[in-house]
Image (tube, rainbow, N blue to C red; front, side, top):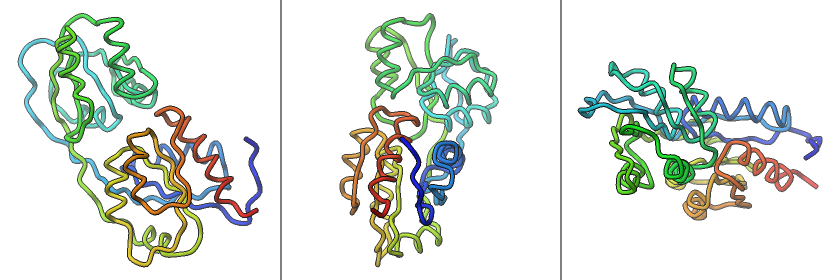
Length: 245
């Protein structure tokens, strides 16, 4: 999509945990340049935990987020070197952490399908956050791929940054990419009194869109796929919708 000239950049409010928000901001800059201005206000901050490793040997670990990889790096545990990951960014982060990583585009359901189609050897260990959807370890085990899970981080809610509050109380449009049902739910609760900004929401998946529907909005676009490239496409659609004629 061709870039259009704007009198001023459109604000893109990034509510992901800071590291992921910064990574997405770099992708925004690469694609849209000065068309957008990222504003950071994480609604969640990761807290890394240190649980004991389940007994027995494991053939590989599963990461469904880059935050899981970051948390795993803080563990003083002997983890297997192979990692199955959801998304290229998670796999890239796992590779940088020393794992031999393979990625599945899409979400945890796509990873589940791939693992069932080509079952790996040995038990698997899903290193995950406190909030998780899909019961991945249980479903893999029931399908004949023994899998344990270990909660190694949680995401603590954060208040909106004062700059974000001021942005939402102003009258200019705000583009809001939402990457999880929980972030959409937290945003719905965090919206300030006196909000005037028309919100243009980009949802990573139908599940996120369902939760985001409760947020007052001028437009809501669901990404065609649950990945960063499709979210950038959704943002591109919203840039056109939010721009003056």
